[in-house]
Length: 142
Image (tube, rainbow, N blue to C red):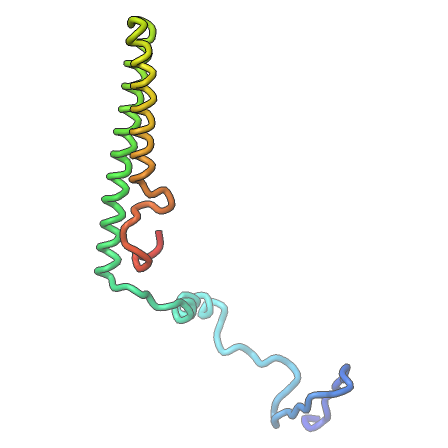
């Protein structure tokens, strides 16, 4: 019975020649490992497929530190710009309500100039595309 031919259905007019080795069967061969062993080694197989790092650990630490400092500096800039803007708004509003006519004109000029100076400087300095813009292309994921 072991040498009985296996029935094959050919759907293509130009078949690909296939030879079966002695002792092979049409069914699937049993797995060499259990499901639990496969689960336990999944991370090892994933690590083998992952690309190696392009930077050293020291470079990663330096760029992470730079990004951390940049985030703090950008937060400080945010608070400075917001506080200056609010102070100018309050002072100009007080001048507009309680000042003379000449001071009211100066208040609008001060408001306009200060607002554009503070907001323009803030947006010029900060890097809104990535948090902590120093490090270049080799700084790792951001």
